[in-house]
Image 1: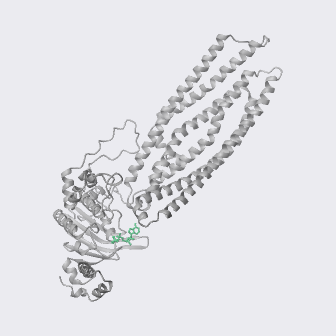
Image 2: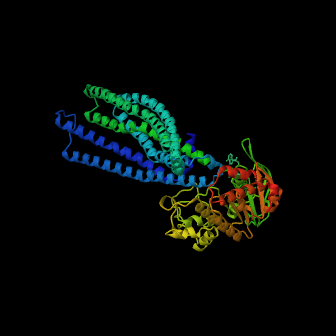
Image 3: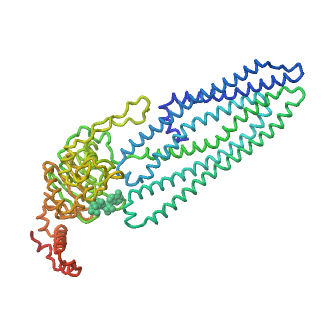
Length: 640
Ligand SMILES: Nc1ncnc2c1ncn2[C@@H]1O[C@H](COP(=O)(O)OP(=O)(O)OP(=O)(O)O)[C@@H](O)[C@H]1O
């Protein structure tokens, strides 16, 4: 019930609709019982007509006609109120579904990298679809049926009691049995539904990861293993769903049995009551009683079903609440964030920065100053903390110790929007949307100061959403593509910049993807540009073109270029070497070569490798290559 309480704010948004709808259910229910009253009057009138006892009054054909009209009128009224109920409650539940989905998406947008590192996309998708549907079903059909059942029971019992308390007692005797069984089954349904939904999430995540990683799966020819894994998970889902159905099945048979028994006993006792001397219980009343009881059959059967719907809805709401309860660790905080800070020059300082993941130290006391406008190269062995260092700057997470400063301000004081507006990152594995190349490049351009999405408010009366954003400025897109060395490739596609990527379009090569991501980053003209191993998939000629482009735009901007290739780094103003989370070397290309450390070693090995490659005619003899490596000059001997 606690979980239900947290849903109340959403229900309040449509209070009027729910209240009118529920009152309509009660009225519809009451009118649906009236036909049996008219049938009773008709039967009693007709039996009075045919028996010769002057004590029983008969009816005329005209009165019977009026009763028939009454039946039609009652059915019509009941139907009209049912219709009103549907318009109110079903629409309100759809609107509530919309509002929860809107708020969930807005909340998910606010969560940070650590959350998405943990979350599985398939699971989130399942919550946004399957679980949300279960909640909607509970609020729509569920709410209607609960009131239908309750009001149906109350009015039916009131009518039955007024007809015969003895027969009503018999009916009442079976109710506690039904309630007991239902309570037990409802608990089972709740537990089993949660287990089934968890498996649904796992299966959705598995499918999603397989589709995203289709190339890896195919590349390793492990389709059969994946099919087998999926089949095992699917079987487990089937097992859990069957376990869920097994709770439902006996319920229906049990209810039918009890009802059959009840009707049998009522027929016996009712017959005795009619036949008793001086009986006031007429055949018409008996028919009305049985008709009224018969109308309870459906609500009684629905009790089990609706308990399931409610339990499933509540379990699903809990899963949605888990998302709502998740908070971004990195966020603007009133009292600390200074909303007046709007501009940046791009001067970056890492002040004794350390970062730990659990008991693993990933960065250890990093001190680094990057003056605005510097072209900084960062290198180091794999896993040495280069990406993490860049992520601290955009506040993907905060350091465990020390401070990251931009323009002398702790990044935690800067509004996240200001910080991230000023920084563009080209990640190691760029993500491209299933959209045109132009829209992929211009993705970050349309960052207008839109008002925050109004959450927790009713959709009723909300203004229609803004127009679909305009196409990004083609001139800016083209210029960014030129700087990223992408123009020639794009011009080669039949539809140029309007070529679609992904599911419905062309597939880009690794290098083209990297360059599209670079164009996306530079089109925003950021104060700080971070390229995380973004030139690894391009050949040296393309690399040279991109570096020329970068040099063109780097005037007055801070560029942080993470790379493993010396050819990429050599023209940087400053190069930093990270090893095991520490800055071990810092200086220009020449200075670092003179130092003879990691960078010089890297340069020597890469030069040798390229010499070996250039030694083209002769096929590469591994032994000769090893000999050459052994006789290679030591770092100290390396001169430029
Ligand atoms: N979310 C995380 N949880 C735990 N460990 C992490 C997380 N993110 C990064 N690490 C660890 O931090 C270390 C540094 O990672 P980082 O990605 O910065 O390396 P890198 O220097 O960029 O390596 P590469 O050159 O291979 O890209 C790695 O050992 C990595 O496993």
